Image (tube, rainbow, N blue to C red; front, side):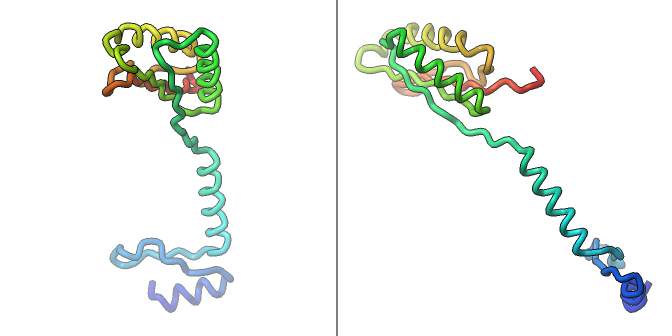
Length: 144
């Protein structure tokens, strides 16, 4: 229908004429309460934002020569991070000649993951990057 007829029809009903698809030929318009429409859109956006999960990456650093108590402290830190739905980046630094005993690092990573296995899953297996060994652990979803 012509634009003037649409505007008059909307005015009679006390509503607004809103252009829905301006690129269509002819353009598509709808008669609705624009204030209510904007309010509902804002409400939907707010609800979607509330439901989204922002995941941060937290880092736990260790050495190959870590003592048992220090190891347990690092495990507890990682558990706390995983409970907060954050990813955990486990990093082992090799100093000096420690780099020749990479198997100790892999064993330490396996022990570490065994401690936090109930809360997280391994995203990337332990791998060497220069003098550091890295492993990523993500929190288990509620479905698992």
